[in-house]
Structure formats: C-alpha cells, structure tokens
Image (cartoon, rainbow, N blue to C red):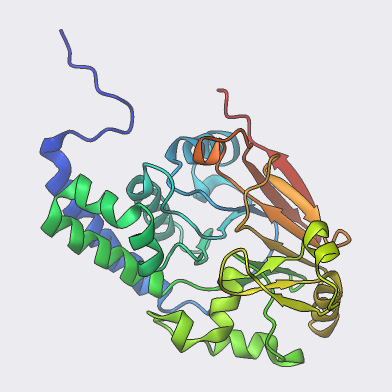
Length: 307
C-alpha cells in the first residue's frame, strides 16, 4: 500500500533539494530586509504574533484561523516579533514558511528580530544543531549561516499607526529621550554582533518589564534594574515605561520575549502588552495568542490549538 509519512516530515531524499531551495529563499529575503528601515512604519489593521520557537504546528494553526487565504487576501498585515527558532523541533520549517511569505508579500508580512536570532544563542540552544541534523554537517552549516545572515538584516522595531511600538524585548534604559526613533533608524544593518555594535538594539531584544514580585524585592526604586534573571539587559519599571511613552508620543508597547500562561499578559498599568504565540512551550501548559491591532485598539485573541 501507500507509504504514509508523518506530517511536516521531509523524506531523506529531498533534504539536499530543500536546502538548495532555502539558500535561494535566503538570498531573496535578505535583499528585502536589507532595504527595510530598522524601525518599520505600519498602519493597522495588523495581527501581532510573539515567540514561535520552532512550533510549526501552532504557526499553521494561526494560518488556518487568521490568514487562511494567505496574506495577500487577508485585510490585516502580519507582524512577527522574533524568536522563530530554538526550544522547538521545527525551527527550519518556521523560518522557511516565514521567509517564503515575506518574499511573496513583502508589504503584508513583517518580521522583527528576537534575541534567538543570534548565532551564540542558537549555539547554546537547538537551532544550530537542528540545521546540521536535518541537512548534514556541511550543508547544514551553510544553511545555518545563510539564515543567520538574513537574521542580521532584520528590522528591530515596528511602529503601528505612529502610536504603538512593537519590539521583541522592551524599552531601552539608554538616556535618549526624544531621539529614540532617529537612533533606532541609525542602528547598523546588517548587525552581526548587536552586543558590541549596538547597545540600543541589544536592549530592545533583551529587556523585560519589572514584575510586581521583582518590584517588591527591589528597594532602590530605580527606573531600570539590571536583569539578573537573564544575565543581560534590564528590567524597566512602570514609571520608566510611562516616561518613554510620553517622550515619544506613544500609547502602548507590544512585546514578546516571556512565556505567558494565557498567551498574553497586560502589564505596567495597562500600557504594556506581552504576547506569546507558541503553546505548550517547553512541555508546559501555556496557550498561544495573537494581538489584533486596529485603529489604536488592541484585541487579544487566544488560539484554539485543539483543531
């Protein structure tokens, strides 16, 4: 009878062909990223998705629910906040899907960089190994390097309707007041080593809001506190966020970077929204969600992953 294959599994035979396709795709998507502003200007409506972390099943579930006919025929744009790889088994599939959609609809699909779109982070986690496991050492290395070359060129932030700042991690501690947008657009591109080439980009990728628990432990009352939990970046307080929003005439910040039980969390007096789009993350029980941003309103939508 017919040979049944697991969904998402590529036959061994096709792997070299798949790798060649990916390398072509990387060249195409690189030429798009490199021309984009480091701070994208988008207008609503748009769906905003947080960390996917190699969860291809949930990504297809989002597709089925929110852009079933493909991005071209979907009224809203799609904005992804980074962390496409690591921690899940299908980083390659997630990247291939998103890069292909970006090439097909460069003005409907937008991809920001997360802290896992960094080579040394992928070395500590799974993605580097995943590339070599799926494509063999030599081809795998080439695919990994080309994908990371694309990651180096990805935009860092997006501004929706000039009022909603979207970023992977959080607001920066650097004392930049009203020059924020100008400084973001001056972030070098490509950016191979943000930690040393752009302290601003580094914080945008890594920072976290100060939780109530952390706030009660900290008696310095500073706006920014060293992020001991991650070993890099800062926690920002509610006051820090309010000042930042006021200085830049913003209403909200939407970010990802931290797993949430319900797929989202409203924090810091309702001005910060965390969205996470990979369910059952690391074997846990969390749900996945997306944010629909439309005319300065934010709607939180949880994904039904049971279908």
